Length: 224
Picture 1: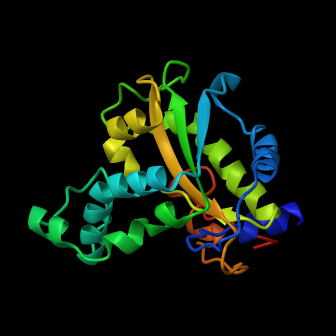
Picture 2: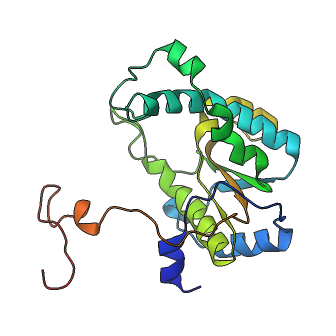
């Protein structure tokens, strides 16, 4: 596939065939993805490849803690897990929300699950002292994860970002033997998608790119 085709058709795949993802395919994916940038080129990311059914099921179970709140907030018309507005849903609504099993099913059912972490001892978290949630450290791991999904797409495979397991980070670390210095960044179920989507819904450029200032003139194509 051409690069533009890969970039504009890499979708969130959540349903997979029973086809395996062989080691040589995974190696090819990571061999391309490893050229992603990272802060200071320190390359502190690590990926664990999981095929064991019990381990996948356990990660799916650990993901339910965050998934319950996510689904309850979404059902109430809130922006789930955003750091600006506290949740308006009750704990009972969170505990009793339906659809949790289906929500985490891709993790349990995917042929392969990738768990990504980042070594916090090598990242430059320049926003760590600001009075807000830190985001800068993600720049040292998320380009790699996205490259994995792009490379997978180019080879006929697919997956999706999931982050629900992060709320149970200590248990995920213990399950997989991940050091305390590593932060869990994402869990990515991967496989052969049941369907290959080619049309994605995204904001037009004019909606999120402006000239000179946040409230500046939207960037438009052509001579407009």
